[in-house]
Image 1 (cartoon, rainbow, N blue to C red):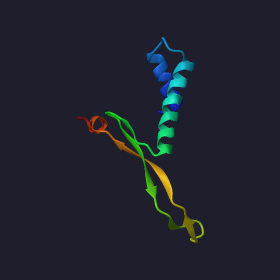
Image 2 (image 1 turned 90 degrees about the vertical axis):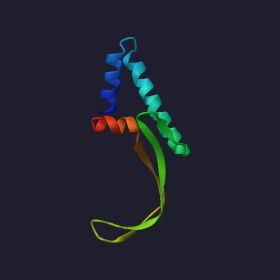
Image 3 (image 1 turned 180 degrees about the horizontal axis):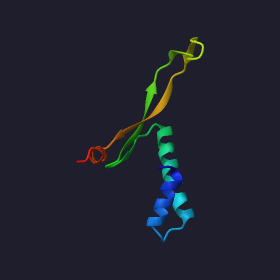
Length: 93
């Protein structure tokens, strides 16, 4: 499912909301999750999962095309851990 499909599904299930309002709500939720992660906060959605960031150290990588050694800077990457309810539903429990 892509963002536009999510917006359409929510709009279809909530006829009292216009497409524009649903779009604004979805964008606001995603923007707030992104902003919290950028601040280094953890975002937990009970029953669904938790978003956080993990630090990756600097390292020496390889250019796959040439095999040349390349320095890769340290960085923060997003991480998602599924909640118990989501894991149980995916596994048919």
